[in-house]
Image 1: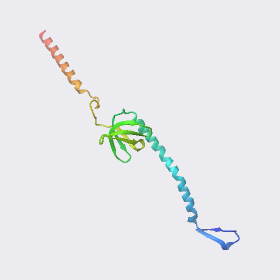
Image 2 (image 1 turned 180 degrees about the horizontal axis):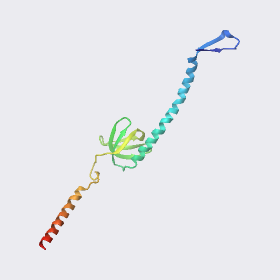
Image 3 (image 1 turned 60 degrees about the vertical axis):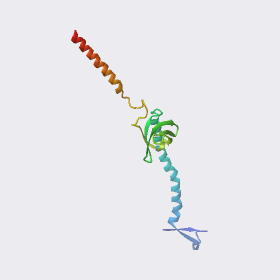
Image 4 (image 1 turned 180 degrees about the vertical axis):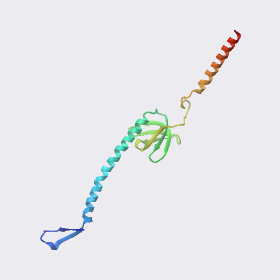
Length: 152
């Protein structure tokens, strides 16, 4: 489809310029596309900000030095001790290289407490070594009571 544009006046039909419709629509489509780019970015950022705040809130529940497993958006997993928290990122001392790595909250997909324990007293709160002496003392007391009753 072609649209006719008049150069000087409507009466002068000899100077009509014929342009294809696609040439007229191309600038309009380009303008719509350029105008929609910031709107598309604005729709993505609130979700990332919400997720980043959720990750930051979760990290504040761990004590500094806690061993964590951090999954990132590039499908990698980082293991290490939690360091300093800031507004947009946090530090993790990597268990592989023993270097501090700064990770943005927006780059993290999942955080959980690590299963490995480093150093004395950092393991789970099972006090089995305390149970053995208690059982020995209880058995000795029961044996003493049984011996006292037998001689009486």
